[in-house]
Image (cartoon, rainbow, N blue to C red; front, side, top):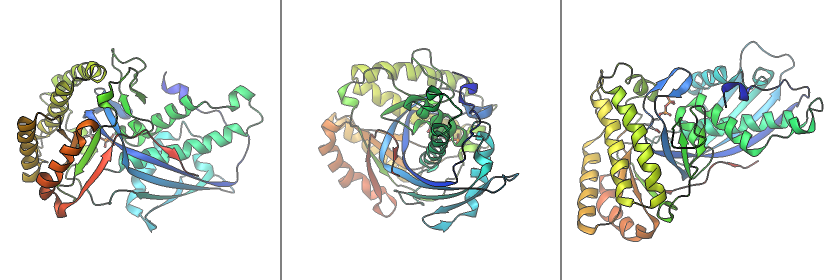
Length: 371
Ligand code: DP6
């Protein structure tokens, strides 16, 4: 597959207007994407659990313009409030995907979006938000192609696999990690020798049989710091240019993905914990050793990590943590041990959350079209 597979034919049928709604989840990386090349190509492959409860719902209304404009015509609302400050990011997204969706300048778009998690929770909405928007746009493309009588019956039908691949491909151009939010429950993004079908261009389902212990995994997200991100992902990825450890880090991520691929199949929970925690700490180590340097953990992040380690030593239960590029902690644990671990979280960890806030999430199975 190359980029050229995702170019569209021109559409002969004009759809005057319509409305589409998709709900798309967030995801949490186990092997982290940190560092990218031109055109949103990752420096290393990553793998994530698709989440379930943390979602964005986006409704896209489209109205055909009487004459196509020179620029994109759209407005965006978050929870019914117009968001001028979201426009530059969406405009950049439209510019990047225009070559693949030639109808973009033919319509005025009204984008209405809302998140299941609070806006100021420190949880990034770019993965769920960009994937929800990409899916809405794909549904328009599908309608345009389906109703195009100039195309043959085969050309008119767009199969689900192609739809999902192109939705992931477009999402990636909005935000890299968003390409891992289309499907579930484990998604690989980035070419890796050991992962059949893997690609730098879009996310694919982890192709091998996953051990039962890794099904229905839980992710309780402890909201340690609900402020705006201290380092935007664009700035963060740029820190890897000229980073003294960059090459070794990219190699390590490749090796970790190879090991994790085995572990996911053989059910080695201890091996899982080692890789996932090491990946989280390495991500933060990269930020601490770049120029400029950042410390994104807060004192309570460390308190939580130490409590998890002490609890694990004491009980032998398979609870571990991962981190995003921020202070919040994702506590990961298998379903079969969830009762005891959840009690531990409530009694020992929630005290370190800002205003006691946390989100109970678990592995999910991807985006859904609602309308
Ligand atoms: C630390 O996907 O937000 O969450 O491509 O610039 O939008 P952009 O970056 P983004 O980076 C996510 C980084 C991460 C790790 C991960 O999700 O793999």
